Image (tube, rainbow, N blue to C red; front, side):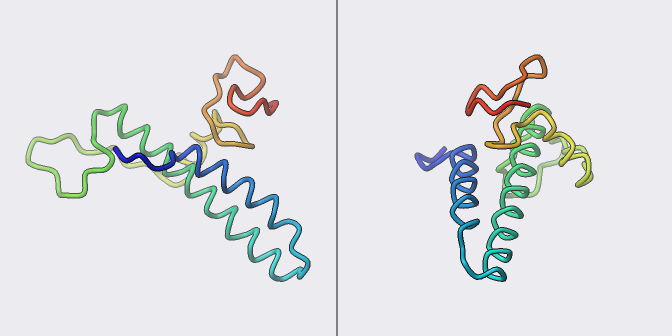
Length: 111
């Protein structure tokens, strides 16, 4: 894998940028920027959940070629199922939260 930032680090970056964007003076520009960042955060959560789901099924999520005959195929997942699977993720930083905890172990955010 690469030495670059992780998905979780990217999500934390987006959250800090989201806070900065809320201070944009022009209302239209602020709304546009906030929408862009929120959409990016949502897509990042979807990517992370799908990546983990594929790994659980023994499928290489980063395989960029057509699978060979006999390779397992990923189960089809709707957008709603993918988004709902983020219910176990922290709303603030997106990190996985154990269902028995009432706070995020990464950032401390309460459920």
